[in-house]
Each structure stands twice: as structure tokens, then as C-alpha cells.
Image (cartoon, rainbow over all chains, first blue to last red; front, side, top):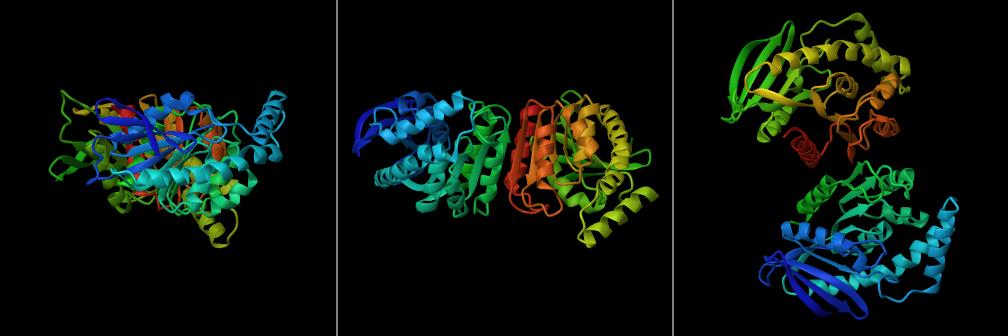
Length: 246
Length: 246
């Protein structure tokens, strides 16, 4: 992990850009973090729109984490931002756009082609980032995962024992195979659903919530479309992490 | 409204029992309430088990209200506690017990007979209580309604303009006619659903949530049965009232 830039935000948050091999990322640590008093970490998931485009929303979430005494970190997804595209993913995106433009239902084949390779590629990268982040002085765990493509969150929650709580956003296509993986999730879950999300199948999201194996899971459904998550919903999610990471 | 007893709780909450005509009730006011600085009020709904039996849970909710600077009040439901029974209600309760003991589905006829007369009788009483409570020095509004039989909450939210926010518990039988009333609810709503509530139809609760006309409505679904509402869910509900009554 190489730090490539650093700046202070609000006097009490250190923002550092890094690269992990070819993968760019950003780490935010509160001033309270030190080698003798390491802080918990929240991994900030995000949609595949590129870190640069997502930065305003990511930094707002990182500020909320820092206010609770947590570090926050994120990495670029495979095929997003400046990272190389691959043909199959580009084809799946094109098929998705075409289906949506034609007002057709998005087939299971398109969803599988869009999501499954991304999960297979991204999850080992997030785990490698976790290795590097937890080796830093000042970052101690426990670790939470928050938001982004829900299938990545599901897979990470299943395979990565250092993640002790996950806040998931039921707002992206979910391959049928992920419902089986969801049954194997056991960490406490906080699931956010936008009730009128135009690009999301509400019943599928409710079925997915039902499928999760976690004994402690909470669904928060709010009005509004995909990007209309109300501010108080963010506060509730922060409360969830405060409960489980402190 | 006649006060019949009073005691201090925790040094800073005044608990007063009262009667409103034949109807017993309880009012809790925080020490901060005064004629010059009146406080908001939360009406505490409850199941028809009698105020005496419900007291421990009611006083816990009243304490949470007082901590937020709100008064809280409740009245006995028609046909509960020491209030006179009426034949049709007793028959409906007997029919319900019989259907449940036989493992049969509870028919719409039983639900209507059980709930609709209770709503018709209770709602004018809660409104009369509101008249009396808001006339007291120290109680100023705005008013929230919380919990109890959801159909009473729906009717109150529709007909009582002084109620500005409602926290509802989707855990009791809902007559089909109440779905139409739900469309006329416009105040902000915070709806709690126990995902595995043995006596509650989950899909009907989700349909009811969908039916509410409010632009701001939030559904919080948690694991566990009817009485297993986790403590953090109560905190979230308190946060909802803090947002809307302050």
C-alpha cells in the first residue's frame, strides 16, 4: 500500500489517497486514531461509477464515521474509474442499457453477467485492502462493511470473518445465486430499501432480506427513489455501526 | 379530567392518574414542563390488555418520552381493564380464540367484529382526552401518537389534525376497510414490523405500509416475534418523534 497524497479535512480528519498494486483507494482516519489507541474501520462500498464521481458522497459518509470515532476506507471497483475495462463486463452493461431503454425486463442472464464477475473480482481486492489497512498503526478493527453493490457486501460478509456487521443497500440487481449466499450471512445486518426505487425490484429485495441467515437483521424502508435516501436514514445506519463496532 | 393520584418518578417525572368521565388514564410530565414552557405530547397506544397489565411497558415508554422533553399520556381502551365489556366484543374475542386454537385462519368477519367497533368507540375518547390534556398548563403540543392497535392509530391520524406524526406497530389484525383509511393518512409515519410475528400477516403489513398516503413514511422491520421488539428499535422510534415534535 502506497500513500500518494494526504490532506486534512475539518482539522480533525486525515484523508489519504493510496494505491494497492494497481487499485486506487482512499483512507480517512479521525484525529483520535493512534498506534496506542487504534480505531474501528468501516469499508465504504459504492456503485461502479468511479471513485472520482462518488467522492462527494463518500467523503460525507467518511465524515460521519469519523464523528463516531471510526476510520473509513474505499477502493476503486474493477472496471470503474481509471481501471481497465473488460469485454464481458462492457457487453453486460450494454445489454442492460438496451433492455432498460426498450422497457424490457432485465433478464437473469444479464444480471448474472453484470454482477457475478464483478463480485468474483472485487471481493479478493477488498480483502487484500483489509489486510493492508489493518496493518496500519491506528487502524485496529472491528470492521464494518457499508453500502455499494449489495452482492459484494453479501459475499464479503460470508467469506471475510473480520467483518462483524454490514449495512447493505437493497438497490441493485441481485443474481439468484446470491440468495443462497445470503442464507450463509450471520453477522448483524442493517438493510436499507428505497420503497419506490425505479431500478429495483421491491419484492426481490424483501425476499432477499428474508433469506439472510443473520439472527439480528433490520430492514429500513423509506420513501423516494434510488438516490432519495433521507438524511435520517443515514443517521440510523450510523447508529447501527456505533452499536456494533464500539 | 380529575387527577386521582400523583407520584414522582426518578425525581424528574410527574406521574398522575386521572379519570375522564368513566375512563381511567395516566399522564407523565417531565420536570421541564411549565405553563410558560409547555412541552409536546405523545399519546401512548397499547393493546387491549388493561392499563394495569400494560403499566411496566407504558412507563418505560413514558420515561423515554420524558428524556426527550415530551409529556406522555394514555387512557384505558373500551372494554379493557375495569371498563365494562359489551357482548359483541366478547363474542368476537371468543371467536378469535376459537379460530386460533383450531389453527384456522382468522376470517375477515372476525377481524371486523373485533376491531371496527373498538376503533369507533376508542377514537372519540382519545380525542376527548386530547382536548383535556392540551388544556393543562405545561402541555402544549405538537402531538404524536405511538403504538397500540394500529387501526386506532390510522383513524386518529386521519381525523385528528392535532396529531402531526405517528409511530405505528404493524402487529395486530387490520380490517380491510382500514386499508382505505390508510390512504388518507398524510402525517409522517414510523412503522414497526416484527418480521416473524406469529400472530401477524407479514404481507398484509407490507401492503398496509404501501397503502399509507404519507409522503414521509419509514418501515423498520426487525427479527423476532410479537413481543421481541429489540431495544434499538425503540431508540429509532424515539428519534422519529424527536425529529417531528421538537
